[in-house]
Length: 431
Ligand code: AMP
Ligand code: ZN
Image (tube, rainbow, N blue to C red; front, side, top):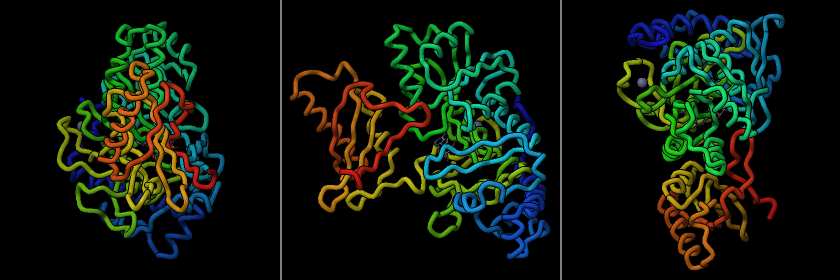
């Protein structure tokens, strides 16, 4: 029924497996300059770990630790054992490099293949990877997973919509990997080319790498005529294949035979109550090249309580609602960009792209949201446009408790990035 038996392990067996692997990974970590020092100071050895819960004895690892020990301070194996490196996109700040041994590359591919199988892709499917290759893990990470599963894999890379379309139709592609913001853009491209998305053979899209709302997913499914599944990962934890939706589309299973997930209060570092939102903290259990212990992802989510109807036993996390560090505070209100997206995407007049700008007016921080409007609604009558502007502002106010300036702009007038979308621009030093 599953790609791997591990997906249905009973909780006791998972606990046992996690404990064994936790001991093993602590032993591996003691070989790296960084962890031998850090764990040595605390006199921690593998024998201190007799249940998954003992993980709390370990200190957290942060992005700053990775930066301070860049590039080799976390390596646990001799240099000639490494076959690959990737670097994070630097969504926030300078990049971090992650090194993989051959075993790491293989086990990573197996995890991605498991995710893909779980959403219905099989050997014989034709799979087009429409995300960027290079240092970004969404390229090679997904690519190797698709090959491992046995799909004919098309490494299309990012952008160039005309060529994407040609590959999709010439090779009868049945599954794709695509960044959500590009998926929405691509739907507009298909429309402009007069292509009915249902005339293509695709049925499954893996979407991830950037935050998006349930509303955005529904739009993607409707506009592309596919089922879209949320895929979560980050370079520090391999890349894609960390947590993935199953066909229930009810949260993402975190592969607990490969990771120990925790959710903490970012301020106190303590575990939050079951089901509450906090910062995701992850320990890699299977990596031998560069394992990470209690890595603070800065991503905010919650565990979804209860079992999943698919029968997989691995716990689920909810879609990422933001990052512990991307919260905006405007007029004393805490605002996450995803709240703004959710409000905008619920309005039929709004096209797919938007831009949030923060600027200073006197001493006050102000919020401006540039919103692309669908062509049908972009009329010449100022009264109509003003009414729409007011409607959007009030919808946003309901959601974020602050009334932003709303600027209506024409469809496809906001510059589009090839990789992850840039949604927030801080102009406070510039205006
Ligand atoms: P990178 O390592 O550069 O690929 O960036 C990883 C970050 O991308 C994560 O820490 C998240 O903030 C974000 N991310 C990845 N996948 C998702 C997803 N499915 N939903 C929301 N955010 C995501
Ligand atoms: Zn499930």
